[in-house]
Length: 291
Image 1: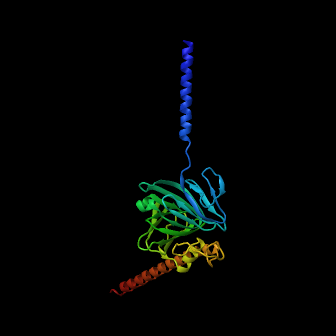
Image 2: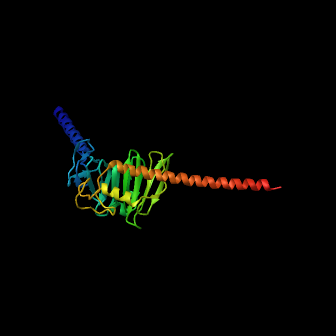
Image 3: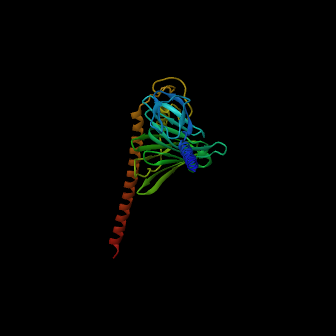
């Protein structure tokens, strides 16, 4: 009888141990591949979800939870499995927060965070099938995609976002939370842009970015303003002809267009105020002239 109890207890312990091992194995989750690194130039590193940092080379896999960061001379593209493309210029960083993709149906979700620097994003199959399933967060605000590509510059918590095209097809929706309410602007014309100044700030009214500034942004990304790769040699980023990379100059672009936008808004407000004062003055004269 005692032996029977001992044997039964041993069986129970083995079962419990096996169940524990099964739980441990079930809790061990392999990293989810989101894409690969390509066109890596200069100093580029990746910090994994487990806080392990290493140099990133062309062809290396990029996993969900990875943060990719470029140095002063760094540049690369992150090609996600659904053909979404992130292009990063110098001193830039992106983190892949979420990536789910079924290549049989093109269903899935893409969520990433642009943390700093200069960037270009081309949406892939997930956004083309269900635009609401792709979102890119900024230091303040976010970008929603409608099958297109955009570029941007981040300076601290301020971001310039400009639509690159294709003309008449793509569009973006830039939003931010202001006093608990989501406020946004819709951009559907190539070369048009907005700025999010920081937390609790609404995106400014849409404005046009000059061709010169578009070319400088494209140059820092190693591309032409049309988005195609450049060839040749020259100063600045390898492969970019005659366009030296000056990060401060790019930040100055953001500050310049920001100032111009503010000046335009001030002028519009002044004009509106002047018109209202004129109307008030006319109304006052009319009232005085009544017997």
